[in-house]
Length: 240
Image (cartoon, rainbow, N blue to C red; front, side, top):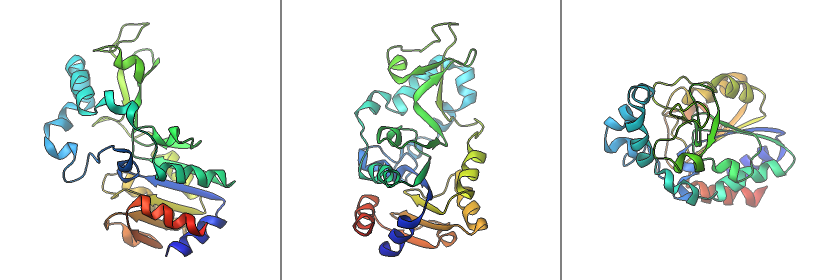
């Protein structure tokens, strides 16, 4: 299986990689949606991490947001072999587009040049009034971060519950132009991200999924591998 998938990767000129929490767990970032993850600990967290709550009580929102997402730890996380493998595919003179559910920015730290952050990012916040963008460093310097121009409380660029998905059409378009779709480290449980592999299936694009456990969408793929991602990329690289 690994050898055949590697052969497809070797000859593909346009690869789209979908990544989920499994791509970042080896960097020490927890899978918030696992059976023991952040969102299962307290259902009220989905309420607090909503766009409605931000606009209703932005001061308290920021206190909870910083604690829940452990923002002070974000700078400690580094790319792992999975992120590096995806970047190395790009180094082999093929076009690689990463579409990630992850909000940690590790694909960019690994130097991937074309990353669609489907659920936004923890690394930036924006002013809901004037649109100015602010770094994570700026946010961490202020208990309640405000725009330095108009004074409005900033809104994080991560997708909150109730926010509209803005990257879906761009993601579908990228997949439809691919020679190969590679899905890594996601259960494909959260919609509408989970619908993206259908674009490849409908277009007859070769596809593969690598995840540490079966998913309900496994039947959509030409190649299905259940393995730890760090071990999987080692196997693939031996045949590239």
